[in-house]
Image (cartoon, rainbow, N blue to C red):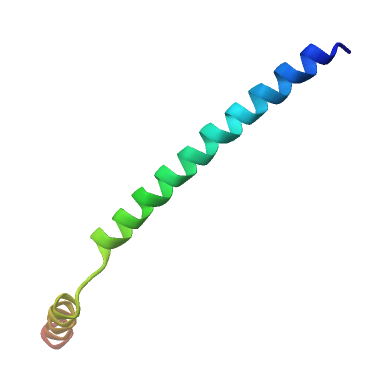
Length: 59
C-alpha cells in the first residue's frame, strides 16, 4: 500500500474526528439549554402539588 494513501486516510480520519468533536460540544450545549428550560422552580412544583391534591379530594 502506498504511503500517500495512508496519509490521506489519516487526514480524513482526523478531520472527521474534529467535526464529530464539534458536533458533540454543540449537542451538549443544546442539552443544557433543554435541561434549563424544563427545570421547574419550587413555586411551580408547589402549585402542581396543590392542583394534584385538589384533584384527589374532588375525585
